[in-house]
Amino acid sequence: MEEIVNRVAESGIITLDLAKYLPAENDIASFDLKPFLFREMILKEKDYRAALQTHDWTQYHDKHVALFCSVDAIIPIWAYMLAASYMQGIAKDTYLGSIEELKKELILKNIEGISTGEYEDKRVVIKGCGDIVIPDAAYIAITSHLRPVVKSIMYGEPCSTVPVYKKPAAPKAV
Image (cartoon, rainbow, N blue to C red):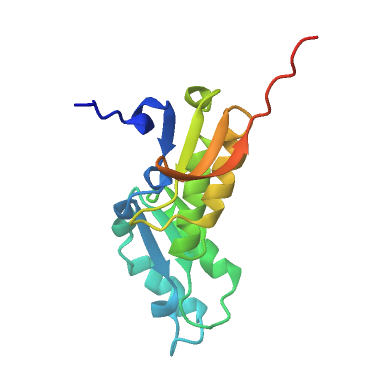
């Protein structure tokens, strides 16, 4: 009987799953200005300031917080600035935008922090399928980040990949 050999496992290909660079769901919170608006349309400064003073800020402790307004209202930038000032020293950081935009920002920051040393002259597959949605920008960022050091970049799964980049062969000495 012939031994079954897993050529994918022996190929030296490194699979990189971008999902592990997404922030954990419990590390993210949102601050929606909608509940602070009069009739969900108008921001009254005096009422807003009073509401912020009684707001429970502990829910944002050590979290990345997305600041946004979920209704179509004209919100002056100082309103976001004021909320951000209350979160100072409580939240990890604040971001003006939706939770999806915040997740995109955080994964891009995490990709930027990846040490390229372990990928030097390696064949890398960027995992393309999974249960977690990865922002498209993350795939562009990881390609730009790894391209200078890797032997090749592929997209997909080790058993079925799409070539993205292959380092040119060194010129032969004459």
